[in-house]
Image 1: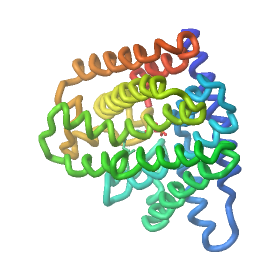
Image 2 (image 1 turned 90 degrees about the vertical axis):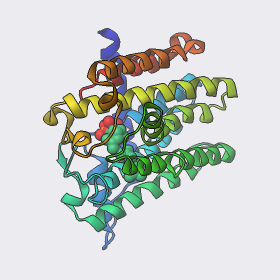
Image 3 (image 1 turned 45 degrees about the vertical axis):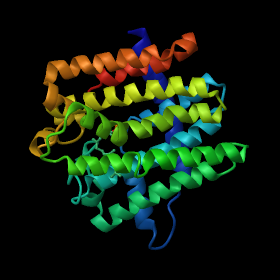
Amino acid sequence: MTEIVSLKHAMKLTADAVDKKLDHLMPVPEGAERRVVEAMRYSMFAGGKRLRPFLVSISADLFGVSQVSALRVGAAVECVHCYSLIHDDLPAMDDDEIRRGRPTAHIEFDEATAVLAGDGLLTLAFEILAHDETHADPRVRCELVTALASSAGAHGMVGGQMLDLAAENAQLDMGEITRLQHLKTGALMGFSVEAGAILGKASQTTRGHLAAYARDLGLAFQIADDLLDVEGDPGEVGKATGKDDDAGKATLVSLLGIERARQQAQLLSDQAISHLREFGDRGVLLKELARFVINRKK
Ligand code: GRG
C-alpha cells in the first residue's frame, strides 16, 4: 500500500512538472494560427496520466540524468502520444466523440483543426528534442530524434495503427495480435524507457534489459486497456467502452477470454519486473509501474 501511494505521488510530481514544461513550450499566438494551438492545448491538458513522461523520468533517474533533460524528452513523447490520440479519434479512424471524459478534438473544434493540431504536436516533439536545452551533446539529441521517429513511424506506432485498421473483422492469431499491439502501444513506451538510457549513455547490455522490460510492460498495458474496454465503467475510463467488440476487433481478450487475458497480463507484468535485476533497489518505481499498469481503472 505504501509503495502504491509513493508511486502515485511520484507520478503526480512528474505530471505536474511536465505540464508546467508543456505549458511553457506551447504559448498561444495571436492571429489565425491561434485556433490550432488552442486545439493542441485542449487535447494536451485534458487529464492524461502522463505515463510516458514518467517512464522517461524514472529511466533517466537510473543513470543520474538531470530532470531538466528528462522533462523535455517526456514533454516530447507526450506530444507524440497526444497527437496519436487526436488522430485515432477522427471519423476516418476510430470515430470517437469522448476522450478523457471530454469531447474529442474534432468534436470540440472541427476535423481539419484536429488534423492540424495532431500535426502541430508531432512536429513540436522533434523541435523540443533537437533543442540544445534537451542535452548538451548533439549526438545524444540526434539519437533521441532517430529513436522517437522510428518508434512513432511506419515501423512503429503508425505501422501498428495500420495493422489495427486492417484487423477489423479479421481473424488474427495470438502472434499477430501481439505484434500489432507491440507496434501500436509498445513502441512509444519502449522509446520512453530507452530515452533515459540514451540520455545517460548506458551500455548496450543495460539498454537490452530496459528494452525487454518495456516490451513486456507495453503488452501488459495493452491487455489491461482491452480489459477496460470490456469491463470498465465509461464514466471512470473517460471514453466509450465496448468499442473493440462493436468493431469486430480481435484482441487478446476476445481470443483468450477475460480470465486467461488477466493471467497473461499478470505474467507479462512479472516478466517485465524480472528484467530489472541489475538495477536492484534503484528499479523500484519501474517495478511498481509494471504492477500499476495491469491494475489501473482508467
Ligand atoms: C493515429 C498514428 C496514430 C496512432 C494511434 C495510440 C493509438 C495509435 C491509438 C489509441 C487507441 C488506443 C486506445 C490504444 C491503446 C493504448 C493507449 C495508447 C491508450 C491510451 O494511453 P493512456 O492510457 O492515455 O496512457 P492517457 O489518456 O492517460 O494519456
